[in-house]
Length: 225
Image (cartoon, rainbow, N blue to C red; front, side, top):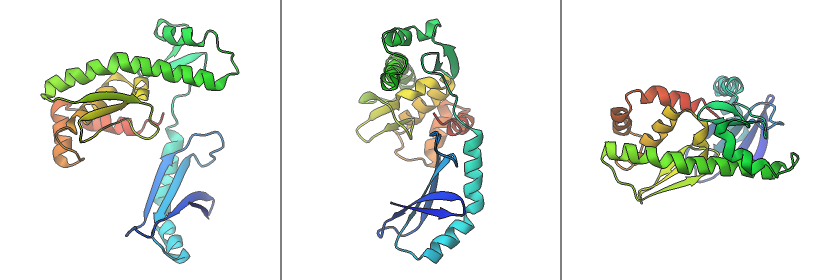
């Protein structure tokens, strides 16, 4: 993957001769040194530099709108060892909600960033294991569906997944967002047991059990953890 520049925009260019078309994707990038606030990836088959320049020029307005949107919707920030983000609210580390996390951090030096991060990750995993199975089971019964297994992982780019073996995987970071958004992800993944796609029928099925799913989906897309 090569790095190219379009005006002041930094773009990662992936060349794949097997591709039939060219694609541009933009994802938020909130790392300290990420000046433009977004990661832009251009995927193309073997094309000329002129073609790339014209493509980027034609999509410039869209790219800048996406970057601006990400800059305006930065994630909620918490201070390690001082706060914790849980169900869409920021709690003090001294609160009852953070008791389990506080116990994990008691013997960790304040400059041990990696150990602190692992403590937070373990805390969110334990919260996920405690809260999410109840919601999955609740909606599975409501929807008349059966799943084979429920798995928890920390993902960077998705909230959950459901495979053809009926295994549902949920992002432990879901515990950070509001409960109604968690319910949307749960129903969304359960609906994949019926429709393994994102067709109109799939969304209608989700809407059947969550009448306000369209609004929840919009809110969830605006959150970048």
